[in-house]
Length: 428
Picture 1 (tube, rainbow, N blue to C red):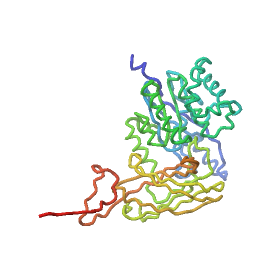
Picture 2: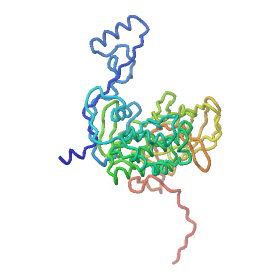
Picture 3: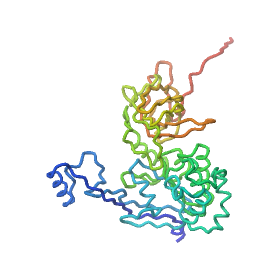
Picture 4: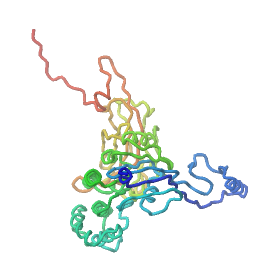
């Protein structure tokens, strides 16, 4: 009975089906073939190879039989590739939409933030929106008054709290929205990759607050993110979604390894021109269009030789303070090394450039990476303009006579520059 009381979220065999619009196949014969196949419940013979298998006739299964439970005080990370069903699941949990089949039970008040500024009225001030959000969550005015000072202080927008939020930047939006969700008296917190909009200092503060909410205050946290470092830092359990189904539910490191094996691509070229960014990512001033590693094979890159990468960036407007961050991760997503390229002058249209990297500090092994486009601000601050998963690559090393073979498991993944002998003395 006690175990039953500890359950805060119960999802049982949930399915979400969407009906698709119909577009003619171009010929009467093709349309008749497609209609007859749908009528019999068969696969459409005119469907292109590689079409998502969740397309069944005129419907699309965004979620297909999802079941799990979350207990009080758990922090659960939900990860998966774009289109896996993460945002659909959160919309069902927050009653934005209803499931086609299955049951969802929530045992507590829910504070959610699925997109930047969800529930904010642009004409109302920050303070008025705090009251509005609190009222939506079922809190009284007295309860909101008691939390108001703490919310304003945490959000770092105190000077603008009585300004209409339509004048807020996206960073100010997310700071106030997160502060409201984190401080109001709710038992369940649901977050969808909202922290990526804020600056690094605020992200760390938010992670600390969510960790405190789960471990000290006993709140239940559901967090969707593509940042594996924050998933590992915050969560004690991981759910991996793939094509509307749960493919893993358990240890965080195991879940991240499964996700990265789906996400990273063992190819020397990636085209991002049609890559779907996440819902939270609304900026499109700078977009990475493609990346190519100029190597014979990404499966055997000699670590002692420089590696060149060719980038194509689409700029909507001129930018002289742009940069590109190359983040190296291990097989399970642990950040290992970062290299930044600064002072990119980007002109409207497509910009192509080549960068050279030195990987010899990394030991032989399998690696993945992320590419981040950013623009610089004052005092070292920066704004993330684009962020995409990169290329999986293998570093190898041809050991010469007199060298030790590197043991990454015992010695670590980073090799310091070769030691120099500066003095030696021998006595008989």
